[in-house]
Length: 120
Image (cartoon, rainbow, N blue to C red; front, top):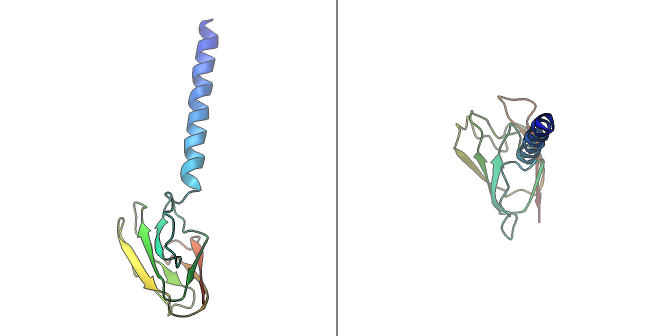
């Protein structure tokens, strides 16, 4: 009976741990809903950007660094936008005035990539 209780307790702890890990790894810190133009704040969280952000021309996109270390938000062409180093808790805003698809990355962490799509 005692062994059965220990087993059930251990199984419960494992299940709760797995559920909490999977939750935090795929919601990017719970993205708020974008505004009517797609503008809004998008979280950098758990060493990841949102995979794809779609906005209308003229919308302002803000990235909020919810990680505990610095990141950059840098367009792959290096000229469209570049936040510089964003400390934990810092934000970077970009007003999307050009229609197109803009891949971007973090200069500090090369595995972090995202895409900004700007439509008419």
